[in-house]
Image 1: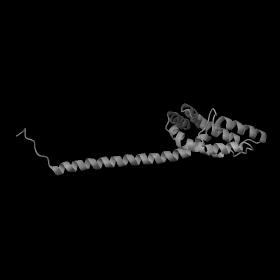
Image 2: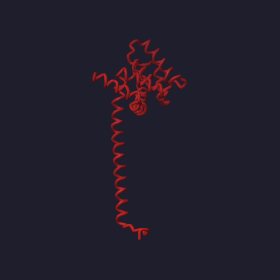
Image 3: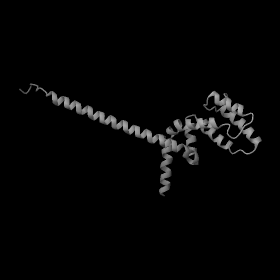
Image 4: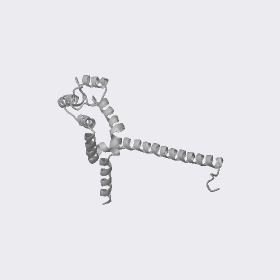
Length: 174
């Protein structure tokens, strides 16, 4: 009787299958929980990090290089230009600088055109008649949010950022 196949008990087979399913469900749930928590931590990380990146010269330079490698450096350059624009004190210089920023980043044929909607462009164009320190605020906020949601999370996972972060930690220990 060695060649004869023994019948398998169906309750054992079903239990085994059920257990495998449970294990798979638990592992999928665990994986989903880990992904969810990492997404949450990533979300809070990049919200906090963009502000820190823009304040730290080393990280700002690395972020700028990263954006250049992705062909989207116009966003950070526009944001920095707006920050510099806010420091303008003379009205003549304010007019000149506002027109320069408009030509470089806002107007439809600009060499480094940023992604803002037509309504914002028109609002800025009208503000150029008599510019004030806040005429680019809406566009700057839009660009900031774009960087915060899109560019910054990718940068925080890039080799450039991780390497710089590692270097700054090792310098701290020295």
